[in-house]
Image 1 (cartoon, helix red, strand yellow):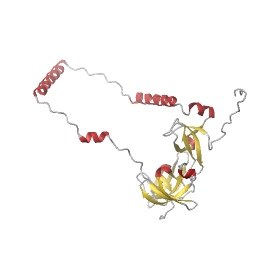
Image 2 (cartoon, rainbow, N blue to C red):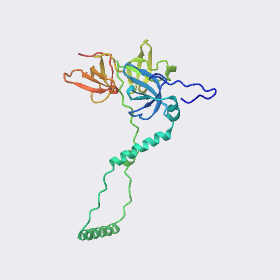
Image 3 (cartoon, rainbow, N blue to C red):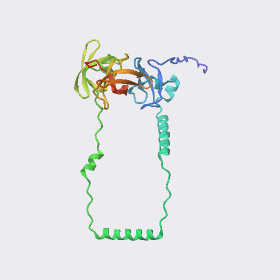
Image 4 (cartoon, rainbow, N blue to C red):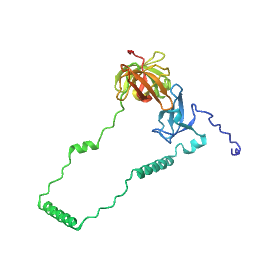
Length: 272
């Protein structure tokens, strides 16, 4: 430690992962980004992290986080040049790996070269003699250029237990609390009921996230992918890889290993 200057107070460093801890995301979509922990989901070994650059709250596995000091966080958290340099190096590395070996030009025989020149000269004469047609642009080509933004896939379903992840709604009263989907109004909005019995209307899907039950044998619903809409029970959970082995309903051999992002705690009716 450096000696403290007059009037300077020692800074206390976080001893463990918790609310307010400064972290560096080591893998996934938000790799190499700094942030601060907003909350901990101990049941699913996941953490809600507010990114320093974008200000967005994301949910990541605790095993993909690295605790950093406050000094490192202050120096590098909002350093866009550091992030752009790392991104540039990664792109250059990928380009080198994907770049094919340069092929040597094939030598042409004198006879083939002569015939090729004659064909090109004849083709130019035909083009000059023929009438020029105005170039027209296909309307379908213009449509392809302006592609609409892909909408977020809908995963809402009645009787799902979800977690509220928006801290600005109602002054953060329901932030990180669990609630039940009572009814689905549209593909991306629903009516929820809190644990205290309060009804919340017109809740957008982006304010919610899936919940994974911690009890073995608990029922879940597949909300995305080819098994979407099917109900099953959890046989085994892999916390480190954020996935679970699920026995799908109505399939004796229908065991599937699914990510936590595509399954959600289901509290509705089901058949064993």
